[in-house]
Length: 99
Image (cartoon, rainbow, N blue to C red):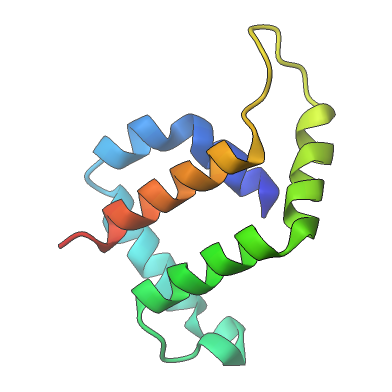
């Protein structure tokens, strides 16, 4: 999960402008509906809300993110902080939910 958040951080400017991004995200979320009983039938907004809540409240994700980025090389500065990555994820979720 933290790898995806990290990648989205660096790709968000391109993704948000790409016409296929929103339909792709919505299609994948719909396809994944049956992967967890707790989310079956929830709308996309509720699913994003659940994910954001988990990512903010469960400290293991922040710890895993820190371990992940510390293992990478950043020649032009430091890696983005976990809170920055979450802010971009929220921005992308908001974009996907816009009509």
